[in-house]
Image (cartoon, rainbow over all chains, first blue to last red; front, side):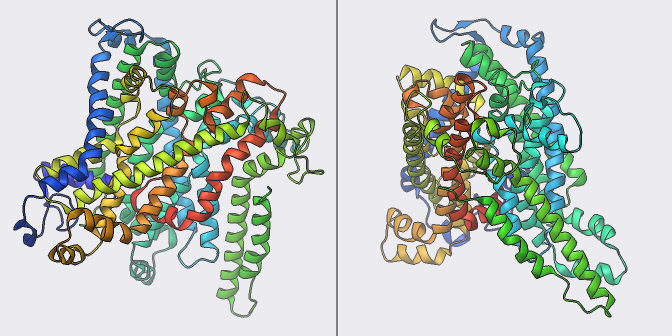
Length: 325
Length: 307
C-alpha cells in the first residue's frame, strides 16, 4: 500500500468513487470503535509535534512564500509589493526558459530510461534465482549513493577529459572529449547518473512481480503463449499499478534534482547553462543573488508544474493502469 | 581501512559460476539448454554489476594512488598503496575533516531522534485514535510528502535568519523534531495498522492510557518500522546537500558533503587524490548503513517506495 494508491483512494472517495476497502483507509473505523468516541485530547497530544511542524515549517512558510512571490525582497529591505511583476518577469527570462527546457529534457529522458532498465533487470531476476540477494544489493547500492556529493564529484571526473570514460574509449582507439565540459553532452552524463540509480524502482518492481500468481504463467504457457506474449499480456498489465507508482514518484523526484547538477557544474549550471536545472536556477536567484521574491515565484511555478505533471499522470492512468480491485 | 568492494565482487564470481555451471547431462537436451541459458544470464548480470560498480571501485582505487597516476593508470589494483591522500585530504580544508564529519553526525543524531519520536507519535494518532477531521488531516499529511521543499525554503530561510539560527544546526534538526518528514509517519501508520487491535484493546481494558499503549505496546512491536525509519533517516540526512548548503555557510559549521564540495572551489585541478579520499570517507557511513540495514532497506522501499 503506497502513498500514491492512498492518494488515489482519497481522490476516488472525494469524487464519490468506490468506497475504500475496510481496514485500510484512515477514515474508516470498525463499528466496535464507534462506541468509544473522543480520543480528542490524546490525539491532540500525539499530534502536537506534527501539527506544530505543519503550521510553522510547512503551511506558514507556504503562505509566506505565496506572499513573497508578489514582492521584491532581498532580505535586507522589507519586502515591497510589486504585484505580478515576478511572474511577468519569468515570461521573458531566457535563463528561466533554458532551465525549464533542461529540466523537462532531463525528466522526460532520465525517468523513462531508468524505469525501463529497472523493469528489465527486475524481469531478469526471477524468483528462486540463485544469488538474487547479491544482485539486488549490488544493483541497489548506487541508488543510495547517487544523490551524494561524493558520487557527483566522482561523476564529474569519470566523464571529464582525462576521465575513466575517455580512458576506456582510448582502448578502442576512439578519441573522447570532455563530456561534462561540452554543452551537448553534459546533461547526458546526468541522465546516465540517474539511470545508474535504477535499483530503487527495481526493488519496487521485484515486489510487484512477486504479487503476480505463478498460475497465470502456467496457464498461459499451456495455451502456448511464448515469453514475449506472456510479458505483454500478463506481466505488464498486472504490473501497471506499480509502473504508475514508480512513474509518479520518479517524476516528482526528478523535477527536484539539484545536487548532481550543482556539483558537476560547480554551481553554475554550465557549460552554457546546459545543466541549469530549475532548482539550481532557483537557488542562484534566491540564495546567491538574494532575489527572494523572484525565487518564491519560481518555487510556485515549480509546484504548479509538479502538481500538473502528477495530475496528468493520474488522469492518464485511467487509460493504461489496470487495477484488480 | 580498506573494505575493498572489488574483492567482494570477485569473490562471489567463481561461486555463482560453479553454481550455474552446466551439471552436464548432454543427452537431455532441455536441461542442457537451461544450464547454458542460466550461465549466460549470470555472466551477463555479473558483467553489468561490474560495470555499475566500476566507478565506485575506481574511486576507491584512485584514492590510494599518487596524484599523477590517477588518470594514467586504469587498473583498479594499486601498485603501491599510499594513504597520503587520506592524511592530505583530512587536513586540506579550513578545519580537519573530522570536524565536518562530527557536524554531520550531530545533525544525523538529532534527525534520528526527531523522526523516530515525532513521526511515531503522529502515526499512533492516525492509526489508532478517533478524532474529528482525521481523514482530512491524514490527506494533508499525505500531500505534504509530495511538496517540493523549494516552495518553503525561502520563507524558512527568512524565518531562521530572523531567529538567528543560520549557521546553527537548529534549522536542520528542529523540523525533524516536528515530524516534517511525513514519509515516515505514513510508513509507521501502515505498520501500526498491521498490529492486531486486540492487543491494545486488551491493554485499554486493563486500564492503560494511550501513552502507555504507545510506549509499551506499539513501539516495541514496531522495531522493523523504526529500524527502517532510522536507516533511511541516517542515509538521507547524511547525503542531504541542498538544505545544509543553504543553512550552513560558515566553514566551522560545514557538514561533510558541504565541505567536500569546497574541494571543487579551492583546490582546482591538482588535488584529485585528497578529494577522492575524502569522498570515500563520506561514503563509508552510508555504505555501512547499507550493509547492516539491507533487510529493512529492501522491505521499506518495496512497500512504500522510499529510497
